[in-house]
Length: 239
Image 1 (cartoon, rainbow, N blue to C red):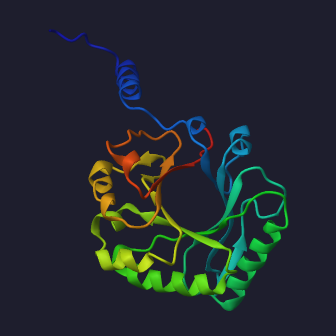
Image 2 (image 1 turned 120 degrees about the horizontal axis):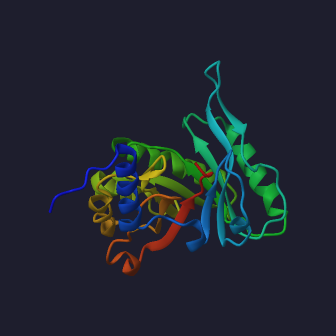
């Protein structure tokens, strides 16, 4: 069959349409758990959610090099319908006692408001080779938090595919869940199926984090994994 020559712009439009038709994309309205980060506008679906991971602040070096907690996102406690996990973006694990105390105070303040607050989430990109050290940090953090405060962490897909079993086991008993980030920016990571195939060796409850608008097709057998707890959608502003 001879192909008709098309203007470049029109050809690109056709190709993009084919990709959109061929690959299901993540629609926030199809899910009930979300990350709500700084700069992302809240939408009505957030009030209808069952669970929201709400950014509270960033922990990292300031211009002088001192590690500090900087408030960000929806950090003012108030009534809420969804269960709220208080999320912290972390760039350094050199926490002072004051940082941990501030997090515990914020957790207590949110708990005085109408609505459920299960615990806090640490969003830190720990490399796979340093996972054992990270597990030690989380164990110390857990001891510093109120006994009823649960602990969630985000995880890189490399953890599931490359980490030693004993390193993954070091997290067990310390954290309540891992949410694996399946995306970079607004796109699902390439070869995601190869990473997902290794999740079966986990013995820790986990969720998968998806980026709103990214291509996503659930792998066969995922729903039957006894440790899989569902999805969390990273909400995006419209491009």
